[in-house]
Length: 531
Image (cartoon, rainbow, N blue to C red):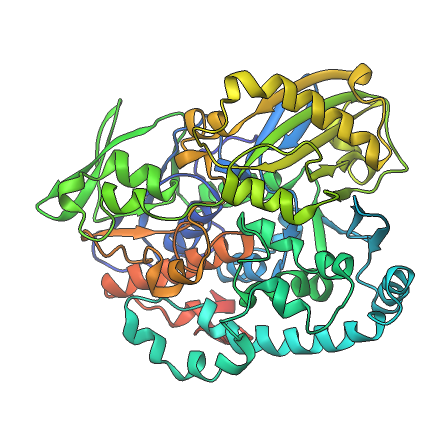
């Protein structure tokens, strides 16, 4: 990627006569990068320290032999959140990262029979649904209207912090109770609209973005599929990692310093207040520390257990964590132009597959999986005449029931055979580059606790004020961004966590925050846009 050496910022920062406050951001994932943009624009001295040799965290790139893959997220959803952050710092997201809106958004292949090419064109989508379940097709309009209202009402909640139970008493949240139906799961919520289980699956599988089963994911998250149809599924040229790289490039232009390939070994404290971090290169002092590392991993490694009250090691062990993923990154000879950009295959017995992942912690023969055939949209990702294939199977997080050292080769072979079910029967002979990532690798190489790639599960008891708070409650001077804090996992809400956390930090520093906009506001303040 381009050099991250800072140059003069094209945007005037919000500086005063006093010494700029120093902030260290631990982790250059999407949340840390977004926070660095906002804090630097506010005039703070920002230093990002990243353990990996490149930016992006789980939203970085895998590159070898001319092939380029996203390490983690491949769906770029609800771009409005990041568009707003870029606008706040005087940039245009789409100028920095060209993007293509996909149509179809993805193909769903049902192991139980049938197929849906899911399109944002409502009339065409109704026709697709009617092929499987004619009686369900007219209900698409009602689903979209109800979830439009749900998102509009809940957006202020997703854009503000929850620092204690009293925040649950806000009018914004109380008035949403009838729409949210918190006693429902996503699956049960969708049964109000669609009778055919395959059609329901088309609007509930998105709970996998949170690493959860739709049968226990709270009904609030029915808005995930709505976001796809209302705002699109996008492919950034170069992949989602290109968005991370652009954020780092803009941050460096604004004066943010980056130390890559430099793991933080310890957080430094004066009593209960964080005053910096220590790496192999020495001590880095700061007025505040923003943690964008995997939450449970960072807590157990960086902050002594004796300083933690609510999030002790013992309590963390009792928390529920998301599923993990088994990954294949394949560079292939030839292309597969008849396979869409995104394809999801769902197991013949989808409920049993989910139970294997979340309850029994075993592997499934007819496993569900996801494939990204990105070169059908973006040929820059592979050499001429070749293509990339990104294959993901949701699996249990690390558990004694599965020994990946023993199971990985057989599971890989099984997954390659499964590809024939979506029209890719001859992949293995065409492989010219391959990388495998198991739950063990997520933990060992990428510092993801238990290999749970979607962090703490988004259960009813681990949301809002019951999630680790943006202004971390156990020690002073520590702030959290990313999937481990409010609002949760998934790129749009991770970016939003950066805006929430930046506002809290700046308020604590006595800085102006009006330019960040108020929660739920549909437009930015005029002053913010003029900065």
